[in-house]
Length: 633
Image (cartoon, rainbow, N blue to C red; front, side, top):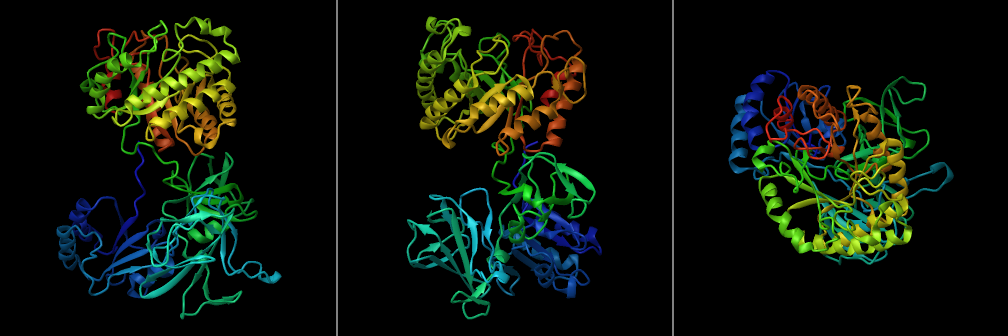
């Protein structure tokens, strides 16, 4: 179930006569996407939304003031759009104007003022994880009063503009002046080198200001001539913590099985658990939450993707944002099927694939005789791939010994490969993949290249195993080769198939020596024999959770790709039994791990494609109820 960007706009309607208000709001909701409707502010957490449109009807807000209420209770709300009307009938013409003018917040109507902004600071560095090193005015008892908030950075990391404004100084520190609701804010960035902006430049939030000179960046905020604290010879200082706002702010456990407790105490009841690959939503002000993260003894109130709200030990959390590690292909159905260009039933017309999102092919250049004719391979695959892509399907292509190596006597038999032979193969394979990816780059046809197939396999039936250290070298060189020709395509690992224990250990070993530029964009595995319903033939190796947990812990910040799964060697089983197994597998992963799984690709399309259970029979005919249900999920 593809994950969309978080909803950042809430429209708050009065509780009284709510149904009438909602009817009036209906056309607005159709005109403007992704609006959360909130029935009264009472009992609802508006901190989850950056922008709030508030109907200021009587008996709805504290002191009948939506702005005062929100600023007092919901410190994470940045923009407040107040519509002062007493009845649904009065609201209707205002919304009609906004719809007609395509003006979500009524920004064209400046009088009377109804839009109120809050000064905010976004995170000022590209270095991760986000972490506060020293607080403003820290350690007052020891006398070490600090005029700044210091955050973790890294030498050479991008220093980013935290609040839009005008550059007024690039001397010892870069200073930017912002004007919000008639009030001036002066933000100073210390610890910057190689400034990219000059005096007088207008800069936007997120724009690069320069590079970090070290592992620490200091932020200072002043409000000239409007009060504040005096420290270290600086006047009108404000605590930067109070202004921090991170779009899509999330935290991730640094351990698995992190307890979520009913109260902020080790003695409180456990109401849920979180894992290292899951993102939790802080339920506290962003700045105050960031000061807690990584601190022994601190607790943070969080909300899980499943809706459980509780307290997590902040010393086991790291800070991130929802868009970091989010879905690679938002809006695309992650369910797909493996096809085979050489099988008579392995390349169905795109119209037969229904609502699937993905197809997967192996890329065969060798033709079992050691061929290196990549132009012939291109002409073989291009017309077919164009048809699937034109029909809206995404394509993942796996490379293997059939791409390079098969049929070459110097690499035969595979069981007698040595480190030296693997190194020769890797160099030639990487050179070939550079040329192949250059042929496909810019066509918007291939979404992902998968490097090799099942290298951790305990047998070589459909793959050529190799030691993890050699696979690490292969992935490094091949990824760099592909990336030098194509900067956009995803490059993922081979599908590991030796189970969550051995497979994840293999993955850790191959990843251990990879530099950052060679890390995979995703980790793929093949969980044959695993499911959710305990079937003696289809789930004989255990629950799919074990695989998700094991592989997710290897690369918590990257998506998992299930590039093969299904039922092997059971071609005569009842299609209804296969349908129950397959659909329960898909629905469980969609529900339990939203956004975690990039693809789930069934093996195979047709009965007779090796030993996989086909979605259609050997004549290409449907196998009810499996075919229809699978293609419409």
